[in-house]
Image 1 (cartoon, rainbow, N blue to C red):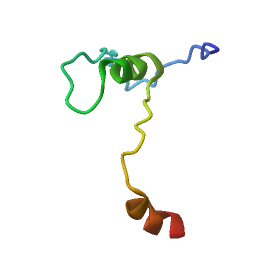
Image 2: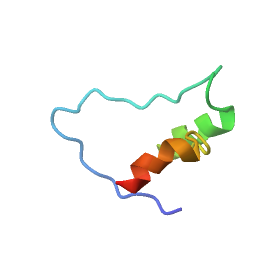
Image 3: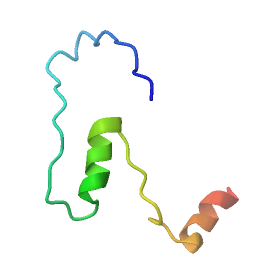
Length: 59
């Protein structure tokens, strides 16, 4: 994976600091939390059933 280029923070965003999330977790595994901390996102498979997705996909 390539490293993203450094970007300048918005002037109003001066105090934000990333904090890795640590467990215990109720909905995600430690591995998923580690991925989120590293990549900024996590894929949660099978969260919705096919029946729940059908109306959304029909639009």
